[in-house]
Image 1 (cartoon, rainbow, N blue to C red):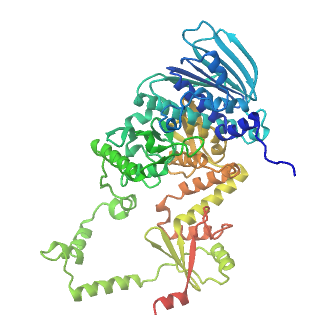
Image 2: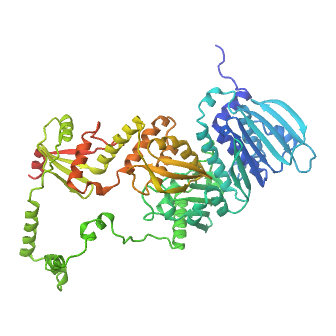
Image 3: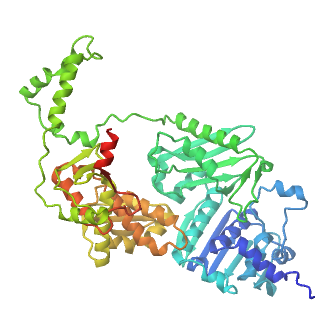
Length: 609
């Protein structure tokens, strides 16, 4: 029987390795930038075309490579840092020429120029799919200049799975952001298709954050600095007021290497408990320095996921450090003594007091109970019972019936519940969030917010399909600055946003001017809509692009449904009921949550014995 186990060729082994290390253009960008940093560069330039699919070029002024090192850097397992097994657990540098170049060269056309400081000439190497096409002496600047052309040109299946240029560019910007944050002492520049995207002079961490993420974040920065025998923590967190509804402005670095760790993120967010809204995310750029032996960075090929020797200790130190920083800057939970909008709009507050009304109140039962000495916690048994009887008598008065016919409501519910409604006797608003109305077979309890979302969603869907969405021009256009990766996403979404009524114009430097918004969108909600839509798209599944418009409509419906005052009057309550049961799907909200339930009379009788 013939042997079936064979050794892989170097070419095939390199392609397999490339699949683990080089997943997209951003992966190659990361490796090349880290190589330049390890070479001691103080000035690094990144040039890409078509989001890196066609061209990635990194130019650095580092120490360069000798003729032999330049050639060896493309060999598998070539490195300058690991001589024995112990070195694996002490690595603090980012990478070295040979650790990723072999993988890149296996799936691209590569040209390398490099020269060391003391040499008059440098070396030029051209490699295509691991095959060396040319090696020669050349004139070049001190440092290294490497060009990656036509990534995955020889692996069509991998190239086919690359996303749009906008998506791939966003990934490149993400990697560029992480690398440049970790090294503020190095100057960086980045170009895409001939346009400069970033110009970052060398400086400190604070200036790098502002230059990279926008000047609007400067006023929200809170410094963090803690040193212990076990762990050093340095960097910046954001003030609670600067928390956003989008993720992406959270950066952890362990020994100067970017990592993802949900456990540490939980420790940090827990320190903000009571300071930010539930669905908001605080900003942070934090550097954790610890003994490399306590951290295993090799649990994933990209080294972004790590394991710690003592997770609970890291959690406790980080949580305490963030709380200390917030306390040191006098940031703590505060009580909001402003009146709720629902209260301030009541007629009892807005209308002037009348003298006879004041006199009537002063003679009342509650006023006397609290104004007389020793009466605050005392309720007379007989008098108290009399007051409850009075309240019950008021509650027994019939609610005026609504003259509007309930045809849509009756017909839809008849289809769903297979019983006939009696004529409605009005509706009852419960705690501002539920609506109860009577039917022949019992009571229907409606979740108001979910009902509004369903109604708005179907309105917006009809407008979307017809292409006729009304827009309202803003009297004073609003200007918003976004982080670079969010701005790239927003630019991609502009056609869809225009279709639902937004009029948004790019203004350069990741800034956008909102000139018009959808009709009925509450004032000031436009930024929340944009943040939430960006966040959804940022974390969407790979196959979710087709569902993008549906998610946009859901977010719009959610934001248009926040007006709690729209159902205060009986006629608007009945209109809500009618519209809900005129919908194609009145039972569930756009996100699949139950909107109403029927409490049958038999069940109510049973509950009351």
